[in-house]
Length: 284
Image (cartoon, rainbow, N blue to C red; front, side, top):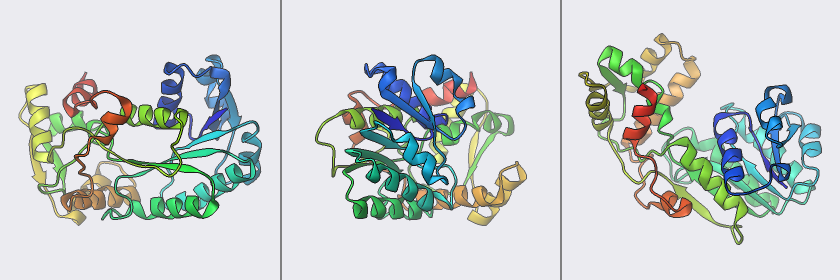
């Protein structure tokens, strides 16, 4: 059986969809979720749904019954990830899991992004555990930006602190498909995949794409990190998350979210989703 953590979340749900599309039987997929009652869609598909709370080791161990492989989707709780992931690794080790695929961050070991710290800690914990594992170092999701494309059209501007930094983004579904490929393939233990979109763009280019697609004038406005974080708070983001996004933009200006290896498209056997396609979806 293949267990997917965070299965009711955006990436985890797509990983399960990709596994089903690849022909994995629903009865061989375990959706690990904090609240099983919120996973009725998966239950209706025949997927095995089990309660698994990152902070409750007993629930994680129980969820591992009969599981051979695990897709460890990184927790969304920044600041608590390292401890939560350690619990998952401990449960997997005790269960004798044969492979863990972990969704890390692009070039984690050299990344200038503050977000990389907990990913590096998890990669270190995986190595120390002795459990066979494959690292899926995911670049930026296109949706991280396109979710606010409508706001950019409304205000005529894309805001950020990335300067001329390039983003090699891909759709969340592309990364989910990569996870499904890795966890169902043989000889994956020890591999490190630097996953990113085929085509890179600056935020100025991104703004021009939105303008072309929407037919409205949209420009990129570069801001100092602190000012950008302040704007994000003003539009409703929690201060901690706003600071992380602003830091990530600065990291992008240093090359932290650029990769031109096309490893992702090679792994999934098709081109990654162009940012323009993701913008069209967001604006539709």
